[in-house]
Image 1 (cartoon, rainbow, N blue to C red):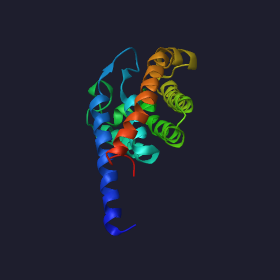
Image 2: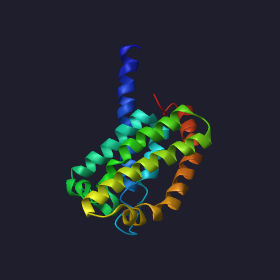
Image 3: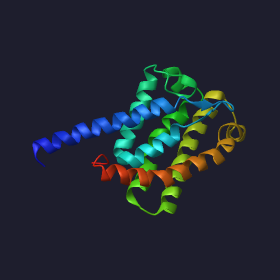
Length: 185
């Protein structure tokens, strides 16, 4: 790879990651409080990021979003931010977006089978639920079943819909961006 193309790849990487991070920062705070964990668009943004960027760049975009929030920018649900949010009862769900990006991205990137992609995004979401619920139980001194009733069960239908949206729109968006020579490196 010549130096000019390699340089373009780095710029391309940074710009695409920044755009998807910005999109997550814009849509992530918009949330509907339904209990201790709000319904937000953050996981949909993470899913779309891994379709557009691939799992590695999607992970970087997600990490950028979390770092901006940790620094105090109001990018988390309800326009909140700061380390206290990450260390609070719902912080495990935010941190859970990182492995979610990896798992979802691998399925989105490695297979064209939409059923397998759907399955992969469900597994990734379940992992995020698991990490978030374990942290919630620890922080809130709550038993597992009440935590699941508050923090997981009410979100399953909405998250399944977001997964359906991502699996439906993600490959199309990826294809269109690749045709415009703006997609993955």
